[in-house]
Length: 114
Length: 113
Image (tube, rainbow over the protein chains, first blue to last red):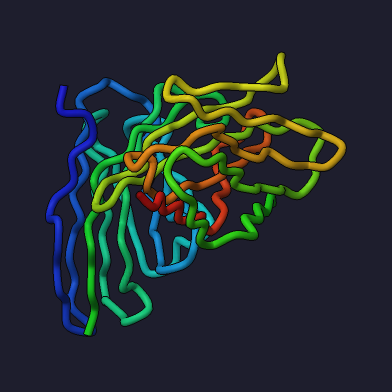
């Protein structure tokens, strides 16, 4: 099992550009999550999904969009990149709800917006 | 919403010395508590968790944490650290049955040879 994979590892965007961060898991987990990690801060939940076709907002959803067409994939879309979105983005998955079950994290995508 | 406080942003400690990383959370009726570890340039990995039962939980690599409901704390301890324990440690809290995990700001543990 590869677990949770994320692409790309690094990306530099200009202000106003768009991009999609890819996340794939091969553990057949129902739940998937997107977090951002800013320097000196904990992880903040952006969006999550409890299954294909179902997504919901987390703490910091503004400026992002997600979709979940398959169990395996959970891409995160940035439409108009802003410097405030410079961060490290982590995708995670779990068998069921996060409060009871371990989350498995991908290696992260480091994004810089200039 | 829950809030999680990790007062120590950095903790240097000599190899084979004991260490305690502190974590406090805002009170709630029923919570689940986690410690995650992040090694350099990697994602987070679960270290240990408390869901119910015994208030003392242990990891396979010698860490332990104790759930203290009256003090709303979940401090992480290890009696003797190794160089390989150098990493960032995050405390996380969830209300039972919720889909949201709230993370602390992390504690960077540096083990000095």
